[in-house]
Length: 98
Image (tube, rainbow, N blue to C red):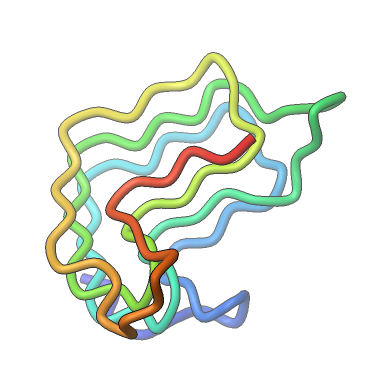
């Protein structure tokens, strides 16, 4: 169980322009911003082969799971409970950006 944010962006699990990675079976609670996030990729160089499976994200400040510039990947069987506890209007359970 991950119950404290890492050093990047107040996020429980933070991936930066990472391809061919599997995040499976983790629990993330009370992340100040995002439970699980992928950022840093670009339209010209998206990340591929990112698999998020069977994770549980609870009470994240903003999004439960946030993925930006991810292609040819899989998100399945995750549970997201009570996202957006900060009350920010941009909060989502799962946010697929770009």
